[in-house]
Image (cartoon, rainbow, N blue to C red; front, side, top):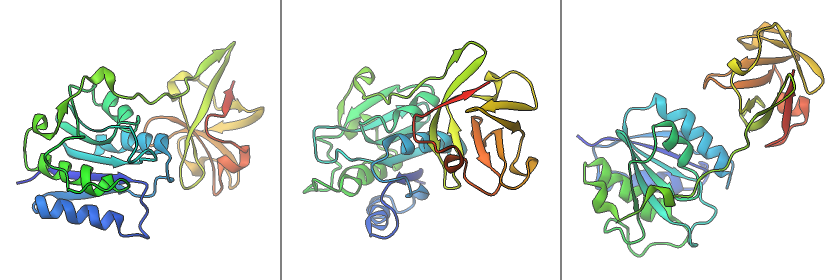
Length: 256
């Protein structure tokens, strides 16, 4: 029985790209179960895709995980496959895979897919999801050795993903707007444990209630809470915290 393969991309669902990747996997590993994590990552948003992958993988079965957010496709960036404990990550070497890999305990083995025998030839310069990552994932799902997928690559040579880091300024915690979801909730790069106890906090100069779910505040009110991934987050009950606070990625959010 072939392993589970998960897919996460910025392809969207309007074009045929996702279906074609499914088709490539099905031709090589017809018994593999394919789970679509999301194909709605904002286009070219490597960090958004990386954080979504990190959040999702703890809730999926061990197997092969393909992620494709790849603005450098066809350029000098590598395609790679990584072993992290009982999981295999496949995608571009642009930082996309690294937060998930680190969350899984680090990269134990890596290969460069440039000369992989499993590529679909001729390889398109603009669709490596079809010609590189999907066929490699399918062969790995069949249980073929990672070492057969390409040339060995030292894990320390993989491209990291650089993220902002929270810090203290006196009694205040200075976090950052790390990501936004569809609802306009703001994921911060801090945890609830980083804050002292209390029913309210001052966020960006405004008093904000602390709670556990959106209904803990009236409609239209801001809430500071722990999101489903365990991170500190901001929401507006029935609205968008991103819009309410006029936040952009990496903006500082001062919490006192």
